[in-house]
Length: 305
Picture 1 (cartoon, helix red, strand yellow):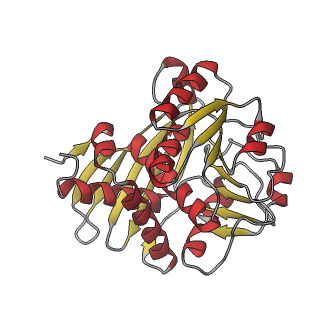
Picture 2 (cartoon, rainbow, N blue to C red; picture 1 turned 60 degrees about the horizontal axis):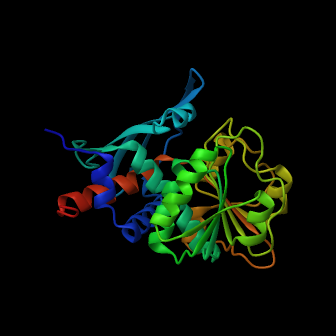
């Protein structure tokens, strides 16, 4: 019988540095021609986003994911991201494992964001969070495991969610603070993580020189960063250039848009310095394959048992 790994198993199995390394290797392989990432199918059902995607990475396999985003679930105490990932053997097509898609999506998204921090050489000592939902939690979790994070400042539209997130940060050993607004986050933080479902820009003020902005909310119709802020960046990194241009709610045309794989391969530099940098992510299947392969490899090795 095909083994299914639930959220609790995924979180007990994952090795955070290993996950980030797996995502890095997969992106570089795709860049070198060792992967396939067809455009994903997405649709809206009763105002909720659904996506179906498939990807292949040489040596890692084929991943198929069905995932959805139900923003209204937060008010019901339910998870906003649900999904299922199936990892197949890339040589013979046999199914290897099914994995909870919500946790896998959160972990791989945060792992790719961590890579954007590494290539830009941004500071993570003090993090800023605009939004306090599931993506914010996964970013706090992964970043607390691979970087030295001491403090975080948070703004969120929901008071209960904000309070719960501050408690979550404390559990991770991070000193969390309520920020008075986005301006305070810009004033105090080295890396700013935007994880919302807003359809109007939540970042309208240009960050300070040396700051790094990570935008991971969701594809269209979500819009998190004002066009003027995008135009003012030294450079904008995309988790995948084609996916971001086609699916992001922001207008990214005529910008210096760097693919994360190009930066990882050392072909292009985009580092914090006299200006600020931006990383824009909409998610794409190569990230899922990399994360699924990492989790499956850890599972068959007996990790977490």
